[in-house]
Image (tube, rainbow, N blue to C red):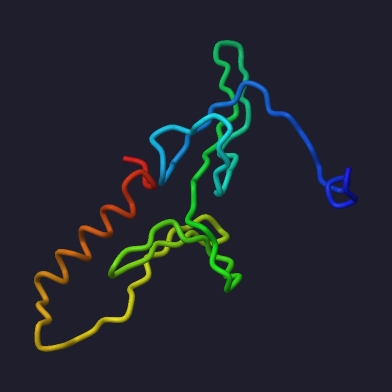
Length: 126
């Protein structure tokens, strides 16, 4: 085993509830690697009547760029991008606006609204 892997902490989580938010597949495929962020949302809870497994959420992300930025890109659109900060919050970023003679405010606003809905669908609980 390599020296790098020996210093890692290993554990096996049994009986967990896992929610996946995937860009490419409706459901995770067997033997396919996914790039993403795994977050432990809650611990196991046991009382005299209820037993809840620990809950995790896995969010698939876009391939990282070579710039080494720390905020994970979750969505890349024509007008906006959606990133996830290290503290878990989502941030919508607007791309540079190109104003020319053909620019129409109403169609731009409509396209941006559609991209925001597409970017946030599946990421925000209903």
